[in-house]
Length: 343
Image (cartoon, rainbow, N blue to C red; front, side, top):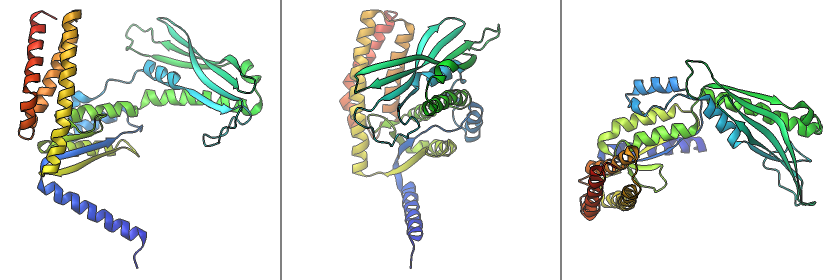
């Protein structure tokens, strides 16, 4: 008699065997799917992993800046709860006409020495159709580093609760406000130490796109990568496994079959058409508005990236390249004209 665990184990082995057989017969390349979430990865750890796995260190992120951690922590804070049950979880259904409070952070002042923001409490009473505000439950200040050898974005955050304002709340709501204030510092310290999921996601995306990947899904996250980059994809998979629970990087081998080719070619055709149209419009706008060297350089970079992807998959995309050749030549002529004019 087999158990559910036995069946799951057998299914897992069958899937691994299927993927292994595909790996041996894959001629097109791999479909790459990834999901990246917040973890506990430091910049130093990431750099060591890049070196160990032989990944391109040009894709490493810049250093973590305390001012960015402050901006992100205070900018995203918004906590809403029922005034009569301030510690209720998110799953609690909202009663019609219920009075609710929202804690949020609002900017007060900013200069070369510090940024000042306040923790604000907004109370919405639907029955009475009123809004009430407590404009300073805490002061959240970022003091910029003024040392002569300071690093850009350096400084410290200081959170000062307003005990008088908090003391006017009832016990349950006071506990909720104090909990939120404690979380502000925790989240700030976390962001000063660890790379966010957004930054890790950007690292993986740029690394995959640098392999001349074809974006299969318009919103990203699913790419086709040529078979010659299999070793790099394996290294990226190993890297993402270290990001923590929830993050994944999956390579699905694509056998050289008509249906698979049609999927990749169709994705490239749509992307090339949209990118070339957008590039042509942006080049025309740059000529009209007299954009500077950096803007022109960015346009050239976009064109070269598109052309390099086409060259990477030239055999697979031969018919599509004929379709887009005219648009590619037009964009190149526009760029040459723009460069001749000096931007």
